[in-house]
Length: 447
Ligand code: CAA
Image 1: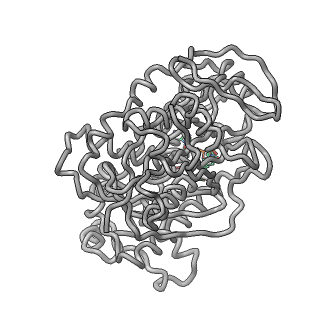
Image 2 (image 1 turned 90 degrees about the vertical axis):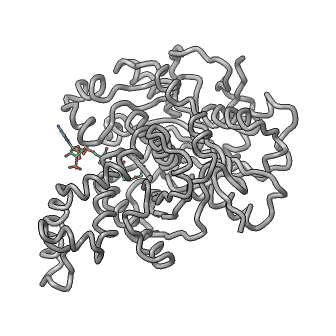
């Protein structure tokens, strides 16, 4: 069977940054270490006045098409995943295609366009759709463009304000891909939940603590479902485990749960038994409460072992690099985690030896659904990853003062109309220009 997967990635961060420990925490009267150590965040990205989900998505897509030398008629499908859509009918993919058609000869007239919604997991679902479209033989040799783009803003004063972010990840899904092949096998954990939602409102209603529990429960179910097809996942067979990263501290928790799960009934559990005992089994306890207390004690002990810390340092920590400095990109977040992992492999000097290695990818969307699949690294991965210019983009972000941050938040609040000067100068990119006669948002390309 021909491999199908991700052939190219381009990332576009919002051009502004908020320094969380040094600018945000003091104004909130909080300890900066809540951000650096607790949540695991340094800075979050914000869109400038002329940026939004369309410009960030279109700019990422243009970089990708330019770098791969692709013309519009070589793209048979454009799917946008977002939680930040401003239109209940016309999909963001049409706005992005319209932007791209301003600068390319040809058009996307015969490309199937859509918009995927299921909170943050929809970026992965859009990749699934592209995968299935290619596997079904409906693509006529053309590639699919998948764009995950979000402006993840919370109401001012909401605890989620600490985890904001904005940016887009554009991915090309093809046969014989350069970066990773996607597994056919997938596991799901899906339940009707009200942990985080936006019922006809721009900013989310969030039950933060509950959302963390729901994340862990659905991820566990997805892993069990995945293992029911492929058999037990063994820690040493996974090079990296990129998970959805609302903030790195969440993945620190998920990593520990995952390790407990995948080491149960293995020689690793046996080896650790001398120092921390065996994992508690529910049948050995008289009540659920007693069992949960024992689990909690075991997890604390497991967290302190060299064995776990080494696995975490190699498999999870490298996936968090970009998230730490951009915050939550919702639909793009797990795709940033994958990219961070691959950047780590490139920085470690891995090349051919990394081809064939496996990533265990865990996506999550509130509401709620988790999905687990694996990806196999392909020859060509390194060249693609080294072509990214995300370091330059991050280094050139404008550093907001707290007062400027409050203005930027208002500029992107659809219920407010405020006039704020742009902080950066657009250069060779799509920009938001205003509203048209039917209240559509309008865009231009600035040379
Ligand atoms: N030094 C070190 N650590 C500190 C600290 C200090 N001075 N002060 C606090 N911390 C730690 C806390 O102990 C805590 O860590 P633990 O959970 O390990 O105990 C961490 O920093 C955060 O502190 P709080 O729990 O006090 O933070 P909070 O109550 O202000 O809010 C939050 C945290 C609930 C995650 C909030 O930011 C939020 O609601 N975020 C949005 C929802 C979210 O991201 N949920 C994640 C799962 S849902 C999902 O994944 C979908 C999605 O993308 C939204």
